[in-house]
Image 1 (tube, one colour):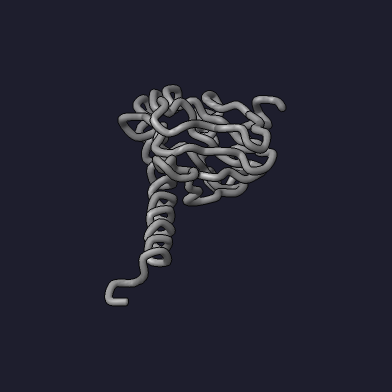
Image 2 (tube, rainbow, N blue to C red):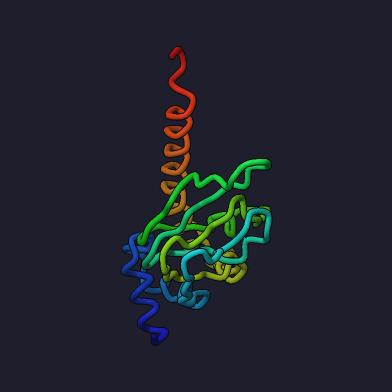
Length: 156
């Protein structure tokens, strides 16, 4: 895939939809396509978060290790979604494991590169944060609903 094509792929992804061409070029400079086979890990809990992933195809399970128990899948994300947000937020360490459930193609965005570009061009940082905050709220809401499902509503 040509570099110009990767910029078009980025701008066509729901997370980057409507991003100014100049800002898309900045992101493209930190991005590459990467493939993960089923069972392959994108990252592990506690490791340095070196990439932020934009899913093009496939499915990724987000998992937590629970001592004395099987690994717990707390969410599954599909094409059009993102994983690895910890790469953009100090202390830049993964908070959970991410494992490909199906053959998965991602745009891997190198974390230090994109953070440096956000420092240099605050417009890029602001655009990324505007796009990340709704994802964080959606995931927080999903977690809350899972907890209610497991433990019941207060007063039940």
